[in-house]
Image 1 (cartoon, one colour):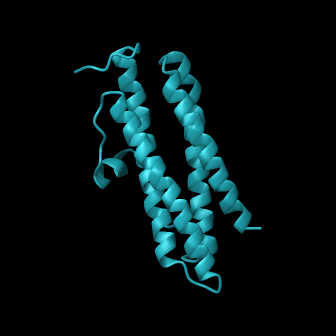
Image 2: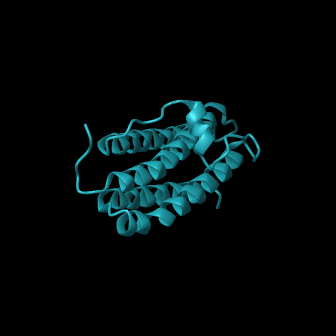
Length: 157
């Protein structure tokens, strides 16, 4: 059954394409944050271990809400690592050192990259594709990622 929410099917498909890329980015970021949680070492291990856990829990919620947004628009959600790696603009490779600061720098760059991608799509989704709901939804994601980036950045001072 087609979704009838006042948006052309062609536009819904374009919005979903953007959401699938966001979902892929979020899932890769979740995985990298989980890796930091599992592998962090050093004198501040416990605090960083808990910090990364809070971050991946928040990202896990984002992953779920993005997937549900795709479903609410009447499309199926990709759910394989292969699917995600094919469309993400993030890399799953660790570019920094395998320590707390290395993980933080890497994750910070990813959050900032996601914020930029989200911002690039807010207006076009609202104005060109006539989907104010998804535009508002990804605006909320911008705010969430900006706060998470701030928390990461604060650890580097």
